[in-house]
Length: 263
Ligand SMILES: Nc1ncnc2c1ncn2[C@@H]1O[C@H](COP(=O)(O)OP(=O)(O)OP(=O)(O)O)[C@@H](O)[C@H]1O
Image 1 (tube, protein in one colour):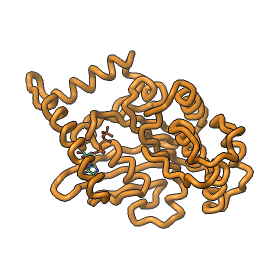
Image 2 (image 1 turned 45 degrees about the horizontal axis):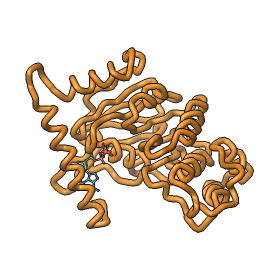
Image 3 (image 1 turned 60 degrees about the horizontal axis):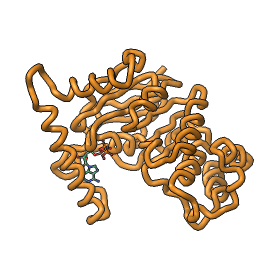
């Protein structure tokens, strides 16, 4: 049975398309990784699934409840780790988790267990402001799991981490049992290791939804992505689109920072 259903979802930013008519389903317990060049639409897709941004059109369901028009109940089935950790810097790691537990009506004892899981049991009483990026990410991953969500959404879980944090985060994710996971990453090697399915995106579109088993190696997956982006035989459209998209992404990220708003 599908727990995540994305049907014809698009997101426009003014005249610009961030995600275009994307549809896929994830079965209960399935793990998928979203890969694509800069500006492909990965973060935009994850943000819509996390209810941090509304689709311009299309429908997203968790279980059989609409997320787009849904109540808080449906959102509590989701745990999110975004680019920005969105932690309260003046609170300790434990206080950040406890706050989240209280919001979700969950026993606070789980917070200590999760700090241990992410390797921060000893640092739980320290303010997050003094944490490194990798430590913050580990706290944010623990927070995403506090309310025991059915679906875990991860945006670049491996970016900007040292070896110890990378290993820890990878171990936590591998150990998630039957939770459904959707992760956007540039780290194809770890992504393919984590996932059952690989969703390739380019220019806002889902261009292939493949079983991870299909790729004998990371190189094979990368080759497939390059091939898909090149488009029909002999066409160089994809390659030039991709570099154009990277520039566009850079410019727009700059605009986003300057404007400080999304839409
Ligand atoms: N808030 C926004 N305002 C305007 N355009 C946006 C906004 N968010 C995303 N976009 C545009 O939508 C497209 C998809 O961006 P998105 O951040 O989802 O890509 P991505 O695949 O996550 O890229 P990256 O790998 O660089 O993180 C890009 O062209 C981007 O510039």
